[in-house]
Image 1 (tube, one colour):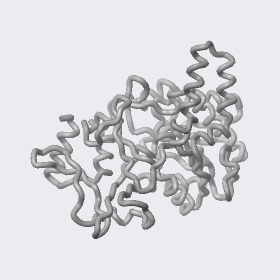
Image 2 (cartoon, rainbow, N blue to C red; image 1 turned 180 degrees about the vertical axis):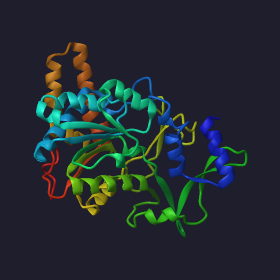
Image 3 (cartoon, rainbow, N blue to C red; image 1 turned 30 degrees about the horizontal axis):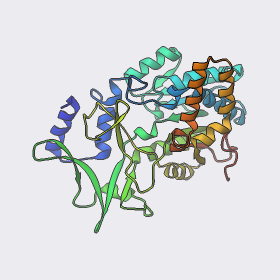
Length: 356
C-alpha cells in the first residue's frame, strides 16, 4: 500500500466515498505524495512521452506559431508567453529557439510558467534559466496581452464520471470493500455534480471536468479583455465514453493501482472548451486534428531540412518522430488542437479555414 493509498483509505473510512475527481486530484496533486509532486515522469525512463520529447520539431513549430500570432496582435511589447504545465521545459526551450530567429519578437516576450510541481519547476529553471517567472496558478499573473500554451495539461485535470440508470444518472465513486481496499462504487442516488451532465450525451456513460471548464473560462475572459491567444493541444475525449486511464512504465494500469505512483489522465472535451470560450466573450478556432495543425505549420518541410543534415540513423529517427506526431494511428489523429483568441482577432496560423 502506497503512503497516499493509506491516507485515502483512512479518509474514506471517516467521511465516505470520494468522487473520481477528488481521487484524481489527490493522486496527482497531493502536496507530499502526489504523482507530479515528487518525480519527473517524462521520457523513456519515466511513464510516458509527450510530443515535445518526441521531436524538437513540435516545440519549434509552436514557437513559429507564437511569432505569427504576435504579429497578428500588432507586435505588443511586452507580451507574456505563458505555458501551463511545462513539463521539463522542453517545449518552451525549442519554441524560444525558433522565436529567436525574429530578435524583435524574442525581445518582446517574457516567459511565464505555471507549475505546481517543485521537481519539475527545478528542471524548467535548469533548462530555461532563472529569468523565467513561475506561478502556482494562472490567476497570479499580472494583466496584459498574453499567448498561452497548454500541451497535455487539460487531460490531467480531474473528471467526474456518471452512469445512466433507470432512475437517472448516478456518479461513479471510489469506496472501500469489506477488507478495506479501494474499490469502485456507484452512488445510490444523484449527486450535485449530476447537474453538469449535458442533456445530449450519447450512450450510458458521461465524463465531465468542472476544473477544465473553469480554467478555460478564466483564460478566455482574460484574452477577451486583454488580448492574446491560447493554444490547447491534448488527447481528445470520445463523447459518451469513460476515458480516464492510468499509465505506469509506458503501459496501461488500473486507475486504483498504487495511488500517487501512476499517472492518471482523461480525454479532453474540446467541444465543451470551445463553448465555454465563446460564452466568456472570446472566439474559439477548431478543434482540428494535431496532424492537420502541424502539417499547416510546415512540419514536413522542417523534417526535410533536419533530414538533410542528418546521418542515416538520425534520418530514420526523424521519420519515426514525424509519423508518431502526425500519423493516423498515432498522435496525429488521437490528439486535437484548439485555439482561443479575442473575438475580433483573425484566425491564427493553422486555423485559417475556420468558419467565423
